[in-house]
Length: 256
Image (cartoon, helix red, strand yellow):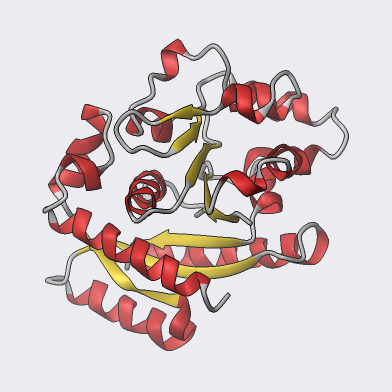
């Protein structure tokens, strides 16, 4: 049975896509069959996986509106080895079209249901807003992984996201829970970041992953080569952190 996780945060620029792509590659390398679902019309996770969003015949848009099956849409990442449900600008149109469809917030869940045995992990990269696309991701998922920077504004955004997850859990998806918080773009030299990190550990306890992803130039360079950071330079500190995070995720699955 596939474990389905949303990588979500309503704040933009916090490393959701970087986390999704690198976790997918690290899990695949660890022997886990992995599918990455790109639900962001910007298609950054698609490009970061080495799939050209400009040349797609079919995308996750066609899957959500019922014009294609998952088997027709999925494509292997040439650099990461995992499968991708790719996205491009067409997906922005799905926001409007989904409103008129039955079970509009559960279209992704229904599409994934028949392929449950094909994967160990399904990772969903959500856009930085509570849209119909994000709602589809949250309704399909067993849990949410929240990447966040250790800064004051990030704490404010976190409380909003936790409330959103509670509402979806209460009304649409009783399986949904917070799996954990991943500290990303971490700079140990900054006292504020150390303080916020300590506050997170005090408040959320073991919901905070032990792995911490530092600020790392090699992770930022990797998407321009169409590769996950863990493949582009596996010896970089950022890549090592994501490998450790993948190992922690596999370990955590045994107790969920």
